[in-house]
Image (cartoon, rainbow, N blue to C red; front, side, top):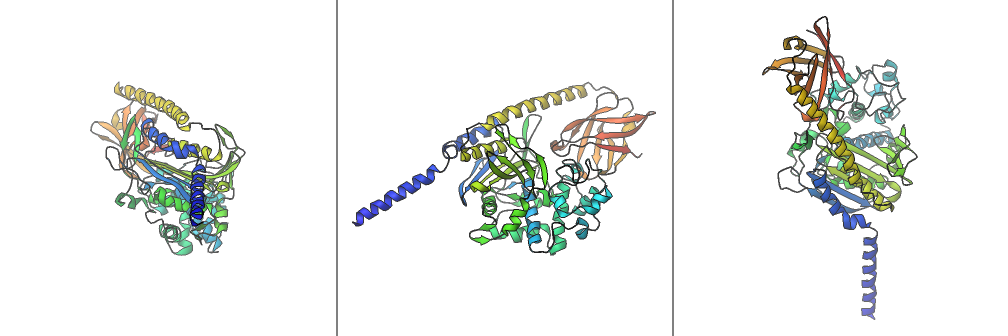
Length: 508
């Protein structure tokens, strides 16, 4: 009798294990490793880390590839990546917690906490509330102002002051425009309300209770981490290592570094309405606040799926996919792109980190996993996105070759090189100098002292500008000349940093 009872237990255990295995989609169980390892080669990716959370448990947490090009150390589930704008959900959640604790209200005017806050649209600056900052509706074009701030030597206070000089592209609260400096401003309200710096509050109130012991709030601490990735980019067809970016002047918008293991705890808590290991870490009402739609982006949907909405809450994108509400965000910082996706109805979370900023695989793998769990047809998003990427790369390479070939002709400019030198100024950025060094013109920027742009004549008053920092890319800079004198120059950096051009007026 006893042996029969033990046999029943054994059969039950086998069936339970089989049931649990069967609940993992075949793509995840049988194909994900092959899919990702193939992508490392096809996309020229040094490393990838992926994590899947389902029903409060980690189904998979794994690293692929290497931490640094040319070195053997493998990525694992505890390897740190800079997560970029996935930081924003932490900042918005922190402010929603303070709203719940009545230490502030998300409907407070920004000037209540930061009296010196101003916008070029005076009324908008006076009327802006904390929610406006957290849902990107202050009227700026996406990334507007970021050239001034990104990897610059400006302090957080100076970034907020610079915002007041930007002429918004759209009327206040009419159009969504992704604004990193707005999230910085929101984060700087935290020390006013609590006496704790943003980075300390995030650590003590979120990282520590969740056991995110490896996660770092500030980018300055990333280089000293023992298990971390090196950032990479692709410039002119070559994969290369690049320096770690210090973006702590925009910290609440994008400075966190984490591993997929640590981030799984954040995702589990998000999917359980603020609870982790049975304990409330964040009130459910604060979680709900961040998922209230505030900005309309469009109808949503993907290339294979019709959608009915695409919205932005507070630090989260929200859209419909295959009949489910998706809560997600992506993050991009020099050398890294990442994604975090929540499907609350399915209690499903997907995390994908990569250590090069020139890929769409981090999104392709997310959709592949999502389709697998939702029972959708396998699409091979990586192949589709790779086709788009290769076409774009070929176009960029043609443009690069054309510019280099034109510069190699050494066509003389309209004026002497000396005529273009001097001090220039832009109302938002500040000062820039054009100097002659090593027989060529170089453009040097006051807030990016370690970077310059090399200027090579294309004839007339047009110059091919190539930045010493490859992230800022290359472009044609036209100088405006009147009566034989240089009046101004138009500067354009990579869209990854900012879409808007800057006009610098010659001062002397």
